[in-house]
Length: 195
Image 1 (spheres, rainbow, N blue to C red):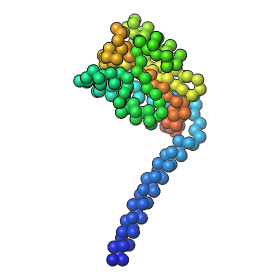
Image 2 (image 1 turned 90 degrees about the horizontal axis):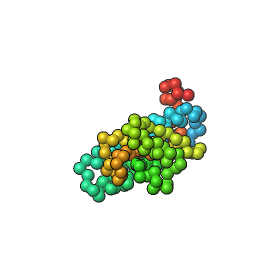
Image 3 (image 1 turned 45 degrees about the vertical axis):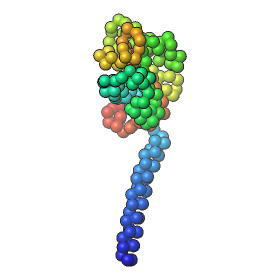
Image 4 (image 1 turned 180 degrees about the vertical axis):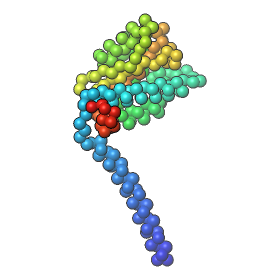
């Protein structure tokens, strides 16, 4: 009986220790977020570009998968970015905001930042002239970055979501500078010679 009790106590102690260790690693990760980091403007710009490119690529792929055999109700939800697990998880992880924008947003969307609207107008002009479009980064004040990325015409997002003939659509990803800095691995960037 005493032997069984001692074995039970040992097992109970071990299970509590693992839980404590698990919690400890979470706490260490959280504390790392609060460490003071010395980062340069170049490192921040590089990280914004890396994060934006990775996020926009994932969004485009996820959107394409969800568009297959979609009914009209779900199509409307997709265009409004409703019930999209990827966007929800990215928003939670990086505290960011994602918008799907197109030609009609230039005149009607009053929530756009001035720089965001200017970039959208430039994309619309390029789309009307069938010029190649590339990703763009704009700094908004001291605390935000807007990463915009065109969605390829062949994906059909513009035609599905916007009632115009341009057929273009862009991802607008609004990143907080503080979250970008948290995600920077200074040592890894230095190894890549980004200082």
